[in-house]
Structure formats: C-alpha cells, structure tokens
Amino acid sequence: MTNTVFNMGLTKGLSMRNEDVDIKNEVLNAERRIRGYVRVTPIEYSHYLSSLGSAKVYLKLENLQITGSFKIRGVMNKLLSMSREELSKGVVTASTGNHGVAFAYAVGRLDLKGIVFLPKGVSKAKVEDILAYDVKVVFYGNDCLEAELYAKKYAEHYGMTYISPYNDIKVIAGQGTIGIELMNQLSDLDVVLVPVGGGGLISGIAGFLKSIRRDIKVIGCQPLNSPVMYESIKAGRIVSIKVKPTIADAVAGGIEPDAISFELCKKYVDDFILLTEDEIKEAIKLMLSKHHILIEGAAALPIAAYVKAKDAFRNKKVVLIVTGRRIELEHLKDILCR
Image 1 (cartoon, rainbow, N blue to C red):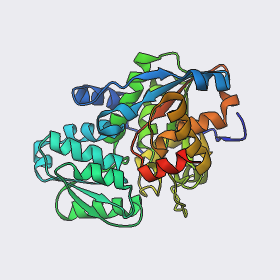
Image 2: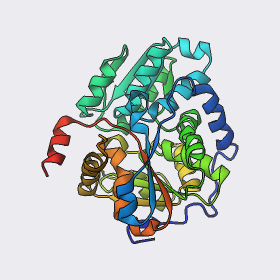
Image 3: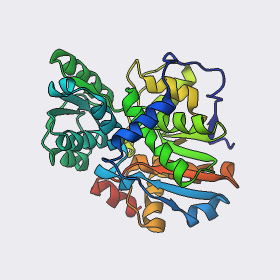
C-alpha cells in the first residue's frame, strides 16, 4: 500500500464487546424486512477511473437510492423491527441531513410520529428536504454529536425511542444490505472503499462481506478535517478531537461514547485513507465531468481515495460506495469555478 493508506492491521486479534452480534444473520434479516421499501441500486463500471489506475473500478450508486442516500436502509430496518407499542410512543433521531431525510420519509411512509434534531449550521439543502415531510424539526448544538446526545436524552425523558444514525445494530444491518447487493452484482470483487463518519455504513458492509469472503479488503475513507473514527481506532478507544469544517459534512463530527460501530470497525475495517478538502472537491468535479453524476462531499470520499492511492489497487476489482447526492448549490458553484 502507498503512504496515503494507513495499514493498521485492524482485523488482527481484536475482540468486540458485543461478541454475540451475528452481523451476517442481522443483515440477511434486514434484507427480508426492507426489500419492499428500498431500491436495488445500480453498479456502474468506470472506464475513466479504471484506466487511471490500471484496475477495474465500479461505482455503487447509492445516490440513486430512495431519499437520495443509503440511509433509508438502516432507518427502515430499525422501524420495521420495532413493536407496535414502541412505535406508538413516537420516535426521535438526530442527523446532519441524510439520515434525517430518510427518517422523515420512513415515519411518513409508516404513518408514525417523529422528531428530527439537527445541529445548527447543517446544509440548507438537507434541511429543506427534511421539512418537506410531516416531521417536527428542532435545532440543537453545533455538531452532530451534540445533537445526538441531546436527542437521546429527550427520547428517554418522554418515553420515545431514539433512532441512532449508526449506533444501533438494526441500523447497521440495514446499511449492510448493500453488501448483499454487491455479492449479487459483482461477487469477485477485491476491495471496497466506503465513506466513514460514525461507522454504521462500513460496519454493516464489511461485517457482511467478510462473513462471505474474508479476503475482501474494506477501506474507510474520511476527511482529514474530521478523522474521528481513524484517530479513535489508532488510539484504541473513542476519542474526542477538534475537527475542522469539511465539505463532506455528512461524515463530520464525533462518535457516541458507547458506539457499537467503533468495535465493529476495529474488527472488520482493514485500512483508512484520509482526504484533504481539495481532493474531495476534485472528486466531486470528476464525477460530474466524467460520469455526469451529481454527488455530495461524503460520497466523493471513495473516489478521491481511489485517485490518491490508485497504485495500491493495481489489477484489483474495486468498488466505490457513492453514498449520496445532496450538495449545496453554493458549494457546487465554488467547485465548478475552481
């Protein structure tokens, strides 16, 4: 691997606190629950990226998923796994955007009552999408972790159920259904590059894929301005670090102190690649110019990571998980005028 890839040996000799978690069966059960509510998203061969790095590169287009990101998978699996009594008391969540949109859509689809807590300064485009649904929106805190911790306390106080964006095995399993689709679409893949924030998406995908084939490499992609999961795994515990603003806002901020996704990432994620803001923006521009596909900052992380570390993937079959499409018009204008 090149020096842009942090080869930390994460799958060797690391145990989980939750040893009874059977990711494979959780994902298979999630698949049965949610299949009528989500799309099987396409996987597209990228001639440009393949030629760039002498590999076979495929894009898993979760930006074409219902609500515009992969998040509907986890939210729907969680809600459909709950009892009627639990659902009748109402549900609460916190989000920087995509999870909130998926939550708002899902509670409307299932005719439930819900509240979304958002940190101040969240993307206007995502707020507008959430407000398009019949849910209550409350702004609290300056980042996603502050909003999450407050929403959790709010739910406990009022007897409601808190739906975590990543710290819930049912949510993680829902995201992991992407792994089932990958196995059906491209079973001989070698490497998967996945954006990482709280770690729910990569935990589900990696946990399932490695239950089928241990040789598949799963690499996390994070912005250099907010590498909380990477720094936490390097430290062996969830850490609180000062983060900077990033265009990959969907993966920015801290991690809950008891996050199960942290333990799953320790067990299943092989490496991390950290990306600068310029690298992320260039990847957004690349997707528009070469594939005519609009993506948001977090979704650009795997593209940027592949370009940065392309020599490490020579002669490999690589899948890039393109997670969402919401991006502010002002940000897009800035990128295109660079």
